[in-house]
Structures are given as structure tokens and as C-alpha cells.
Image (cartoon, rainbow, N blue to C red; front, side):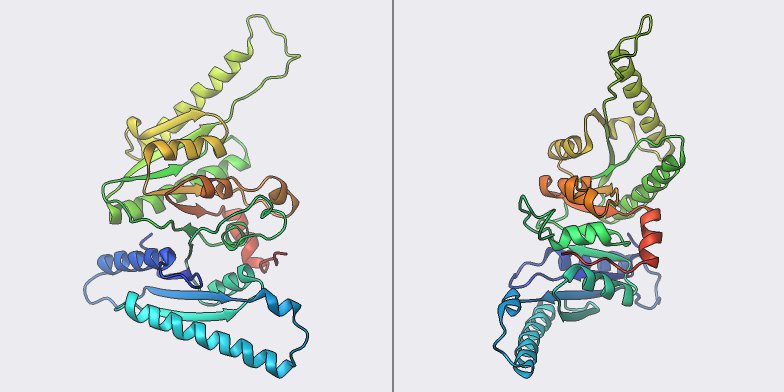
Length: 328
């Protein structure tokens, strides 16, 4: 994560603890430690605070001028608070405060990230309700679904030196999807290795092997459904261990379990208690994400560690050409 020179940290309103800003400052410290002597400072932090009051939608008695004046007063008040907060908590860092009146915070945050040429977005987790996926999508989920940049969900805890950084890799297939999976695995591992040099944490690989259920009509001599499941498990374990060996990760740091990822990954994280988890996103959009969601969204709710979500290159390429869709 050393190459992340411009980081956007989303600031939460009316909160004295800002985990996203703390993580951004830690990454800036890391970049400062690793730049050469005499090299100019390159790392920047954009502290973005989206501001909106839904009561404005219900008000029709104010004139246009009154409405504009009240909004400006709110923005000035929040901007003064943010500047005072940064003066106390970000001394010595290059932090640019941005306060924006935003009804669609996800779209506006992504537009600011694109305009400022950010490399990473950091956000604290939101509280998610049962109907959030279909009605009012929380800001962290909006960023996970629409951002072509890596999104780092910072939980309110300290980084633990000599701890564990977990990387949730997938077993690649032999088709075009397998090529993208291998690329995603490598990208997550590189980012995790950069963070491990800073935190002194060990890299652990975790993998969920989805059980294969063969057709009930398949009838072959000497064949049992259990054999298919065992062969799939054996082959997947072999590929994970080969991947680990190529990158000097010992076998005891590989954790492989049969089951669905949204169940296995949180379970392994509860056992390993990692400092951070690196995971890829399926980049679902539209109706599929409303009905099924992304695995990373469910993992965010069920783990206590930081989560770095890496978007696949195919989704990043499409997002760079298409403006972020608005969330309703």
C-alpha cells in the first residue's frame, strides 16, 4: 500500500473518533518512512464530509434565498468543525478538508475521488439494517458496489503489530474468469505484503471451497457423490498450497475450509483475529446485488477487523468509462 499517494478518507458527522482518518494518517506515515532522503512529499489526504438533512425534502415554505443561506450556514459550521478537528488530530500531515452538501453521498464521494486522482478510499463501516440492500443503501455499500478504486473499511481498533493479515483468495478456473481470478489474487497479495511491511504482520491465506453437488441422475460404476466432493477439495487444496509456495508462504499459514465464502470467511476471521482482511468483490450491480448482495458486504458486517476490498480490473475498466450510477 506504499504506492497510495492520495487517499480519500470519509469523515463521519458528529463523531470525535474517525477511524477512516486514522488509517489514512497511518498510511501517510508509512509512505513517509519509505520515500528516499530528500525526496519531495507526495502523499496527500482528502478528508471528505458529506452533509445533508433529509428534512429539506419535506420543506416547501422557505424561499430559494432562505434555503441557500441555511445550507451555506450548515456547510460553514461543519467546515469550521472539520478544520478544527484536523488541526488537533492531523498535525504535520497534508490534509485537504472538503465539506459538500450531498443528497447522493456515494456518487459525490466517487466524483471527488476521481477529480482529486485518489488511489484509495477509506470509510468507517455503517450500521446496516435488513432492508438496506433494497431501499436506503448505506454509504459504505455504495462505495463497495460502484468504486473502481480499492475501498478500505476501517474498524475502530488499533493495528496490532506482529499480528495477521488475511488474504481471501479464490481457486481459479481454466477459462477467462480464471485469468481474472489469478490477477485478483496477485493484486490482493501484493497489497497485503505492502501493508505487512509496515505493520510487521504475517500473511495468512484463507479460502472457502464451495461444495459440489453432482446430479442425482448421474449413475456410474464405483461412483459416489462423496468422491466428487473429496476430489474437488483435494484439487483446490493443491492449488492453494502451490500458490502459497510460489510466494514463500508456509503451509501452516494456509487455512482452507469447505463451505460458502460468506460463512467460511467470517468464521476463519473469528478464529485468526486478523488485523486486516483483503478480499475481492464480485462487482454485482442492479437487481442481483439487491437480491443477493456482494460477499464482501456480508463479510463487513460479520468481522471485527479492517477490510480492504479490491475491485477486479474488468469492473475498474468499465467504471473508468462510465460515471457512477446514482443510488436511490
